[in-house]
Amino acid sequence: MVEKTEQLYEGKAKKVFATTDPDLVIVSYKDDATAFNGAKKGTIVGKGVVNNRMSNYLMEKLEERGIPTHYVQELSERETLVKRVQIVPLEVIVRNIAAGSLSKRLGIPEGTPMKRTVLEYCYKCDELDDPMVNAYHILAMGYCTQEELNTIATMALKINQFLKKYFASINVELVDFKLEFGKTSDGKIVLADEISPDTCRFWDATTHEKLDKDRFRRDMGGVEDAYKEMMKRVLGE
Ligand code: UDP
Image (cartoon, rainbow, N blue to C red; front, side, top):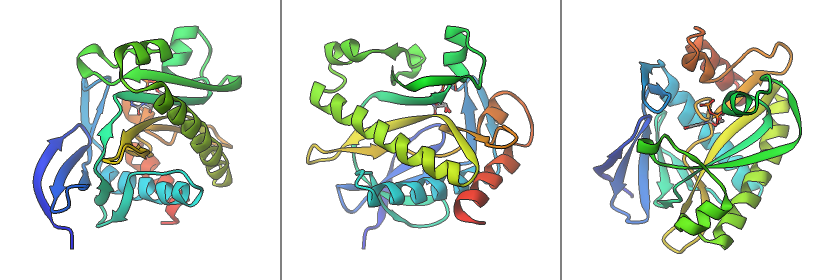
């Protein structure tokens, strides 16, 4: 039996604990919410439970489809056993419909369909506000190797193909989302972090109502209800 030992790290939305197995850690999801790189802070009651359970459900589905992930076992409503990885310091953004920073930067109204999927990379660095980088920067700075970047891009697009269809089946448009990848002790690239309303833009496919963290970022109200609705559509409860 793997036992939880000391806390390794506390992030904005999760805590990470070591275990008696050096290759496994436990993540514990909090209800704390931040936006704009921590400038806006709050609590979304029940968010930790929704994000933990939804992310685990989706990672199980992705594993079944041959995408390696860090997921090992759900331990409780808020806690999950995952493989210990070294996080590749990139936020990998996948976009199907224009929204958020892309809409602002390129002057395209939110909701505009695009001719093809857009992949973006941001260097994970709070002090620098996660600046956008391209493949040249990534290789020049050594954030990962060319081979790892190829793997990451291929995996991100495959994940998008599955998630887009899956969310469409529960009447949700997957507008965009952020992925993080990690390297296991044997050097394999796996999907890490989470897939949740914190990290994806979900719009109801009929009404286009927002069912994600944008309700918190933009002070729209109904934040908890949106998370609950996504949990209901994904997990049926
Ligand atoms: N995203 C995220 N964490 C970040 C930045 C973005 O999970 O630190 C997600 C966000 O929820 C959205 C997608 O990545 O689904 C694209 O975000 P965008 O670049 O438009 O930034 P935002 O408008 O959220 O600042």
